[in-house]
Length: 334
Image: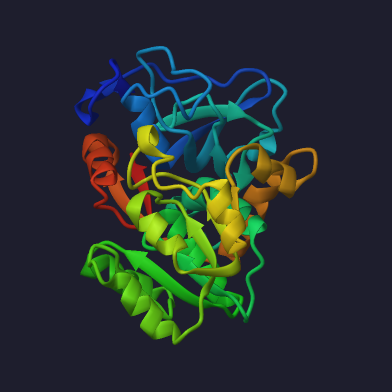
């Protein structure tokens, strides 16, 4: 099969299209003929050799990618043969292997793709969508809410905007450049502004007419994230789930300290990791969030935006993602 492999940590150009042996499913496993593979910002950090966001860097060479969707074409011993021929989507966990024409996974991980949902959208919801569902656990959003979403044209931001509008909230979305601002408007935001313009906070204040934000969903951090938090009113909620504007090394540079949080009566919570899983509850909280995400998409309440690249153009996909030149979920298609 064809697969993208990483032979050395470093820039995107280290990703190479190779011919490798087809993987075979073992006991309790199944194999998916991949039609869509998700690309995540985390993938770019791992490719660069940054260990911070994962327990350990993979051994090289490795096939990156942890989200795939396609058709089950083989099952291992002990796996229900009813899976054969079904469309399936799965998060592969910490074992990579998604940037390929075939991927093997334990049979208790995949979900059957709901009718009417294509593979690329299913990939968006199994990773990005489940994260959005987890983030939303940390803030009450309803008709009285004023929700501010930095990076509102991104994979998670798109879903947060749509969810908040469905809940009746007033939604302000931030995006970089006219094209992304237009997409945020199309998702239903009451106001979409270009955060690259220095007067964007004034535009938000003018639009809100004296109201303050009640929730900031911040996956950006940095100066833009901090400026968004300045628009929070007393008693507001700051939900942090990323660092995309400044990278891992400077993730704390613009954070509010405990004294300022207390003075302003703001609750700031880190959504990712164990806190998210604890809120989801159940024996398999990740699976709970995945099911919620797929259900919302199948019902048409959430519509993931997808930017597609051919598998052979994984380098271009990584460069676009790192350069903030993408919208929605980035997907490779073999």
